[in-house]
Image 1: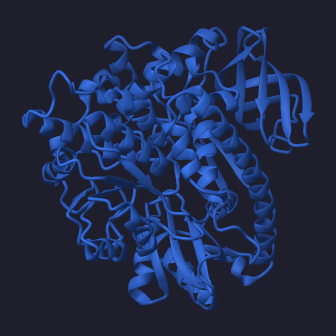
Image 2 (image 1 turned 90 degrees about the horizontal axis):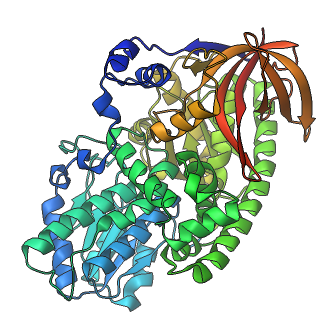
Length: 575
């Protein structure tokens, strides 16, 4: 049985921030995230790192500018997740703004083309006669695809953020902040962010060449930041200062009514208010609807939605994405239940003590295994890889893995590839998430290799789960005004988590919803004013006692025009 500990973050720098004019609670929150100077939370765009700090960007901008001025057809080749979809939309929209002739996009179908710019996707582009292919969120490992494009005389410009292998592909240009020795200060750019930076550099190049005039005015590429924000949040890259500036600017556009028609339509079908948009809306409502298309159908639906010119065009596509996402949720729930049953069987065997866990079912869908791996990683607190049959490759499996803090998953796969040459047909990814291809007959061999590689890098899991908070709020501090201040203080997300507080409350009312969730009426121990609270999946998690110590988030409940405070519980223990 897991033991939850409520632990408070170190906020020793809070007095320093207060001395710089930051309100006490906000100073404590920022200090708990490593902020020591108020300048670090100034998220204006003028603080972005300069494009010319990215390695290889001058040559890439020259190549792209030449294709634009030469009116050659440019095809943006993305990936089938939200980062790749928003990257395609940013690419097509941005190229149009810069004066390119009829830019187009291509995205692989998971079941037909596999991942990224592969030979099959390149072959499908032959009839469009592209003069340049620009990848986004992929390409740094696309050796075969780029070789195929080169054989057809089509140059490829790679923009990517994934970690490279030992050898780079033979591309005409590569822009990737994670290449060895690249001087760009932020390694956390999402794929859409890398392409946005390339567009900025290309605009500067075109300006120097005199491309812009009265008939073709220089565009404001800031109009693309709503899409950049969406892709950045949805890809779960760390929100360092540079990414926070990009996301904050994008959220301002959405709140001000300046978002593209597709994003507005996705807010509408999600039942969210774009004028109150937060990073969590992008991460938990908008992003999953776009991702669902790439998981179950064709990501082209999501890209066309983001490229739609008006609500009439965007809304039917957004509604279709919403329906696909509902189907994805049902399939994910079924597969997660099946994965839990497999894990239970493993727990009854010696394999239950594995440091790294591999799960497989012949009936699973390859587009959803990453979500299953994520859920099971949270349950088992160990790195998990989930496999499904690769429909386009008989006898092959497609796997997606999720890791835990302190274990770099792609490094684990690279070690396995080095120790067992040929075991992995392909692999790639990040520290926390990675994908791979594997022959079905070699699953047992991979399972053993994965367990050994994880065990060598990470100590055995424990049943102790830490829930980190920003300390206690006085009853007078827990207000709607503070909730609004915290919502607007920064884009919260990966590596810059939303503020979470802890305190002791008495439970006045308790109601079970759908057999899993708890709706509570709580009263602060130091105050007689009750407040509503929700604890999702809270049944049996500790909130049954008459008095509880809980970790909670301040939330704004908007209902029929009325705004009031509500608490979202993240952990609860008997007081």
